[in-house]
Amino acid sequence: MTETSRQNGASPGFRVFRRRDALYGQTEHMRTTGLDDAMRDNLRRLVETQGPDAAETSYLFGGGGMSLSTAWFKSGYPVVLHTHDADCLYYILSGSLKLGTETLEAGDGVFIPAQVPYTYTAGPEGVEVLEFRTAEHFDIRFTSSSPTYWDKALGTIADRRDAWVDEPRPPRLLSPRVEA
Image (cartoon, rainbow, N blue to C red; front, side, top):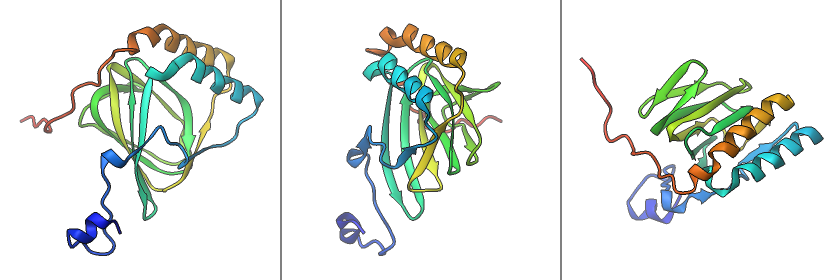
């Protein structure tokens, strides 16, 4: 229990977390598994190609068998095909993403079961998502080793890299849309 929750009279099981205390860029909660030499090379090329301005992640909370993270991907960023060993519920805070034939916008979400491969591309303003997972620690396994796939993804990233330098976050959803 945090000092804050004691001061506020919260029950012993309560845990308060604050964005200001998030672990930015931290990945100790996510283990990369299933890497062979070719995949290590693909991931090295990905890091080199995208540079520091493509994405921002933060680990907000881990406890009770759950975790909460945020990720912000700049416009057109192709999240490469991968799986996790924990279920995940994504909630789009701002911007949009393309997942298969679906375009999801702020206020939308998607549930992705463990071990199901997925990829998405950030929309024209980028996308910021909350990631609710059913584990405090989980793995990430990249599932495409096709050189054509990686060359295409890295080409997209290289083409977008200069535009990302000063790209702002898309505006956050202030209230849900209700349509009659």
